[in-house]
Length: 188
Picture 1 (cartoon, one colour):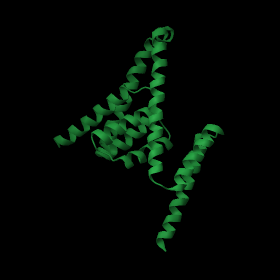
Picture 2 (cartoon, helix red, strand yellow):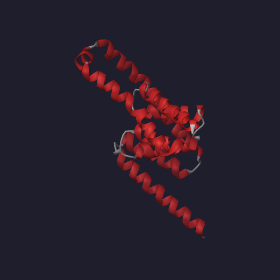
Picture 3 (tube, one colour):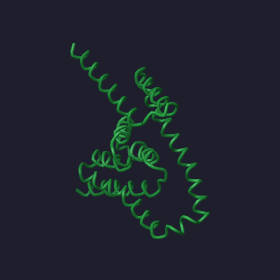
Picture 4 (tube, one colour):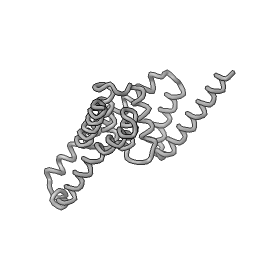
């Protein structure tokens, strides 16, 4: 029982620190979650983290909270989900509450404006890292269909300005069709 509390405390503390120190949105925190839960704690394997990332991106709601729900459940069941979500939502709630009290001072402070601009550069680098790692994992499958879908999704999103939601649903449909075809072949 004591071990369960220790694991829950580690889960809460890790989510809290990751959430408190992450600027730039969901992609950044998912990258840091991967480093923490896959590489350091070894609670989740690389492929499972890739699946979690895909699910959280295609589900409604904030990406870090979605990831917290799944990772927390995977590690410690329902109590793990609740603890992980609490750990990931408390820092932004606290920070935004403080900022709202001093909004006028934050808005007009040139040093804060510069700091935010510099953080954007760091966030862009982390997002590029996530994209490269996700692309590598897709290429590791050596499935022409997946690689073609990735390239087509990039072209549609970047060059043709197709909505991300449409791309996700089309990829989901292709994935389901691929699964059904594989099952049908397996049944023969």
